[in-house]
Amino acid sequence: MTLTLSRDVSSDETLKLSYTRPETGGNVIQDAAGNDAASFTDQAVQVRTPRLRCWAAPRSTATCWS
Image (cartoon, rainbow, N blue to C red; front, side, top):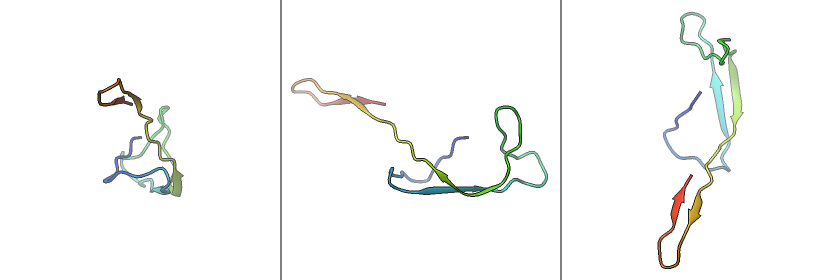
């Protein structure tokens, strides 16, 4: 699952995620094997930010990529 936030977060922030499994219908979260996810509340989420690798030649601006 990919969760897209409305703003950037920093690695020192604590994020919590909750999910309520629908009682009916096909809009459930599933794992790769097709098993339905159970409901959960206030699950801590690890914030992962890519490390940028930079290279700077003399008298040039740095070039960074992730």
